[in-house]
Image (cartoon, rainbow, N blue to C red):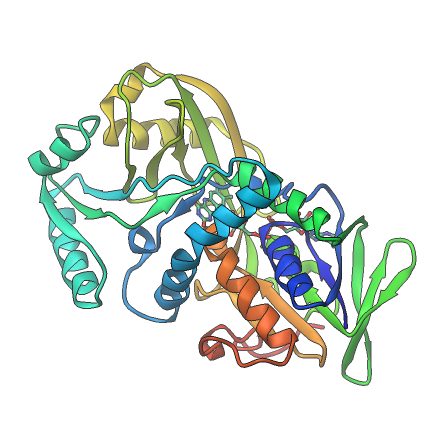
Length: 368
Ligand SMILES: Cc1cc2nc3c(=O)[nH]c(=O)nc-3n(C[C@H](O)[C@H](O)[C@H](O)COP(=O)(O)OP(=O)(O)OC[C@H]3O[C@@H](n4cnc5c(N)ncnc54)[C@H](O)[C@@H]3O)c2cc1C
């Protein structure tokens, strides 16, 4: 069987590896370098509990992926000989007001009832665990099983392993999905065309821009996120820390990644003065010790946002077309499970979980 994959981000590359393991001949079409977009812009939190608002299909998908992560990361590291920056650091969701503390209590209650490890801490208990935390922190929820990986290191290792296993990466701009009589035949490229048994679209925030995919821009579009890297903080940070959209992610060596913004501003990857100021204020509210740190880097990436917050995962509107996109703020976390589920679909197996909540056609009206 032959498969074409549009997009060499974490989704396209992870799917390629899983398919190659099932003896599928895979070509990945990437107009830039593998991992050039959201997949190397991410903070790398593997944190379903920090992100979850309620039980449901997204939490189930995320938990399954988190469970796969340690062995997946270890395999990629061993096979590539490269460090992927996986750190079992745990996470603290922080309340800076009493109202937020009540919300955290409720979060800990439903997560514990759902069988997840979560503990409600007073401000003092949270500071005993994470001394860098602000004296203004009223309370925190501790999620000891939410961790992190370094997305840049991960993409380097993933791509190296994919090449080692014989996956072809072709530098090409894909123009459209080719169709005949309701079946996807392959892809039209800027120069020439390619045919295959199955065509997989993993083009991140650009998925809705590709003619023939059948996904409309109203349902999948870019959401810009800006990040800052700070060094050296005056205080060491040990856990993922989050309050609202603000977060601090400690990297090995003492640097911290601070985020973020969520901006629906089209395909604009600029870092702005407002974004920088917002992120610094959020980070310093969590850890006042970061006030003295130097900004060593600043960047932005485009998350594939979807209208209902769930990824688009499954068969598209044409036979032989599979879509794996729209992973929004959790694509690094969701890569191993997405790759496994797509491989099960493509090879005719039974997917390990119910994919109906993620059906790419759930919004109706294929755009062509
Ligand atoms: C600031 C920020 C922080 C984030 N933090 C986290 C986090 O902490 N944890 C987490 O799990 N997730 C995080 N994410 C989300 C995560 O990065 C994304 O969900 C994930 O990277 C999406 O992967 P992808 O492969 O679908 O998309 P991308 O990495 O964007 O890859 C899509 C690829 O398709 C290519 N492409 C598009 N159109 C075409 C075409 N026509 N022809 C050829 N190639 C094409 C692009 O060049 C690109 O390389 C964050 C994202 C951002 C921006």
